[in-house]
Length: 314
Image (cartoon, rainbow, N blue to C red; front, side, top):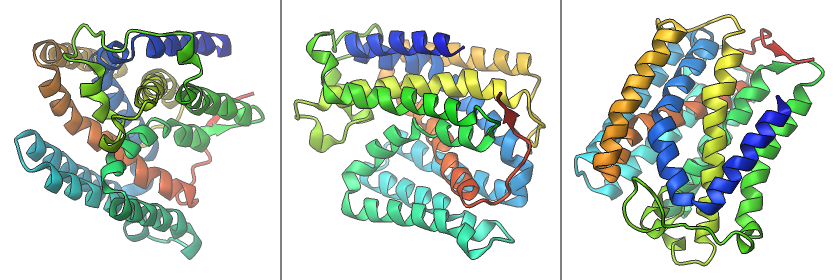
């Protein structure tokens, strides 16, 4: 299994180096919606009942995130929608302090620090926050794996996952590999225009003219692929072996896979017709799934609602 993941990582890195825009756009069109759906299913199945009524409040906040994103798609001023979304992200990060009962004071610290850092970043670096959070979101499977893995080899698997999800992007950020692989950064079968017109997905606008902007994008694309593998392949396999605590009545796995496949094909047609517009529509669901990770992982980091039922790895 380790060798298989290493092989996948090497192929993903090669694609991110050689064809960053094509890899970003095609993986987004084919795997983006699936990873959103599977992560929602995993989060609910692992944490839904443990969070009880608080989970429904979190869903309510996420619906507001979706409304804000939809308003942006419909033409609302970007400065207002971005500010509103950041405010909701900060609220979500701090929500465990309020929504979860029976918390000891020290269990509130991770949520307080998370909300505080996000608020400080939004004030001091407002143009950097959304791209930075978009990149950081790709590393959140490490938190879910740390929460669920048990046994003597858990640390080994976590170290390996960290090497893949964090070490690979850091290597690409240095630009060392790019000196040997010139690549074709502007090539893509579905995304129009040069790579420079798509940098905003992961690179802050103030950095677009820097010589290392492409390196950052390549690193983020590789991290995106690693995130997809974790959420579509690894986490569902783990979740299937654990007691389910879902709040929502999810369909059987094969039915769920069929629904996701049909929805992916439908959205894929939209990407082929108008990549930018389809990307914005997808962004509504993507934002909702990304921001639910903050309150869940910060609550777990504080030790709240610890579940001893995990996946034991020998």
